[in-house]
Amino acid sequence: MSDINAATETVAGAPTTSTAPAPAKDSNTAPAKERNASLWSDAGRELVRNPAFMISLGYILLMVSMAIVPWLWTSRDPAICDIKQSKLPPFTGDHLLGTSVNGCDYWSHIVYGVRPSLLIALLATIGITFLGVTLGVLSGFFGGWVDAIVSRIADMIYSLPYLLGALVFLTVMRKSELMTRSQNSQVVVIAIVLVILGWVGVTRIMRGSVLAAKNLDFVHAAKALGATNSRIMFRHILPNAIAPVIVVATIALGSFIAAEATLTFLGAGLQAPAVSWGVMIAGHIQYFFEYPYLVLVPCGFLVGTVLSFILMGDALRDALDPKLR
Image (tube, rainbow, N blue to C red):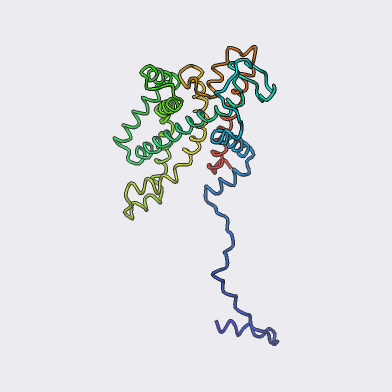
């Protein structure tokens, strides 16, 4: 180091000042921000720049706010009706979307109808995600007889037509009085039926992701260091294999909302006095040609919500798959 300093003192015989050493970095000084190159941070930046994702997210947040705090959107009680004001058209008096056949404010039914639909979809999605991820991880990691049992059960469930199976289950439960007229009871029973018939897809996707991840180098390194199977599965493999399940779960939220409306329209889902978009469509379909708004209004909100979840799922898929960028 002394030789280097001496060499810098003279240049072509002229004296120069010695170069001062670089100041030491202050430990209190915040380090320069570095770009986080992780998959999730990159995906977040992609989603923020995606207009379809942001618009869909805004619409869904709007629906969620209606479900959580409906009194912020309407001051009317959906159970209070006046038959004398039956089937008023939209923008009549203080009825924004008109009135129903029974003279109920239609806007209040739209607002209060969000909650059961979203609640059923949320419970069903949580159920299939928990069940599918657990069985998929166990099946893909252990293989052998565990994989065989899970796969055969999944094949049996998958061979049953989804809509037909839901209709049969709900009809049996209703006749056996396991499904009462209480809205909470109906919501729970419908969610359970959707979970029973809907976990197969998540399990298969999770199994495939685990099979691809368990042979990677970091998993072999964890095994060599003596990590337990549970730690390897849920600490190392699961975080690296969960991305496809998140995409499927997002799309499933919209699918379950559509499924609830379909089952309600066919008479096996929610029933009055419960308030939901499916109940509104089923109760007014016979008046479609005379009063089309009674069907088109709840259908519009239903389509917008389902489409928003599908668009969010597509955006998540593109953001979490580096090959699609």
